[in-house]
Amino acid sequence: MTKREILDEIARVHPFAKMCETAAAAIVVVAVPQTGRPQGFFPQDCAAATQNILLEAVSIGLGACWCGVFPREERIADIRTIFKITEPKIPFCVIAIGAPDEAPERRGYYDENRVTWE
Image 1: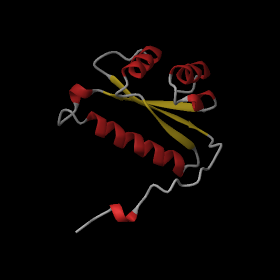
Image 2: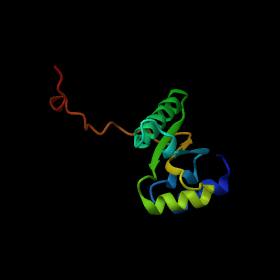
Image 3: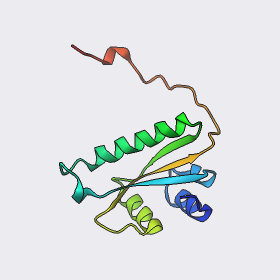
Image 4: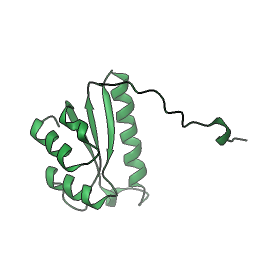
């Protein structure tokens, strides 16, 4: 979705999606939980799809940011309203996409001592 007024509305209602004010586009990942097999795994499925979108965006030189919606009821309601998403569908996240305006340093959370294998 690339309509400026919709991107601005996302930035207005989602406290962690302010980058939509300058993003070129946004993708809303929507779960349809009753169709999932096995049932109950839609968060994992949507997270995997989201991660693949983020990786692809970076691979073609774009910036992308995962802005969580599910399981926050107020965010679900706001995104449902903006995009007219009806139940039982659930908006899972918004992915803001555009030209990156920063290249942050790694935060150093990885600790090799916490990884084990046999």
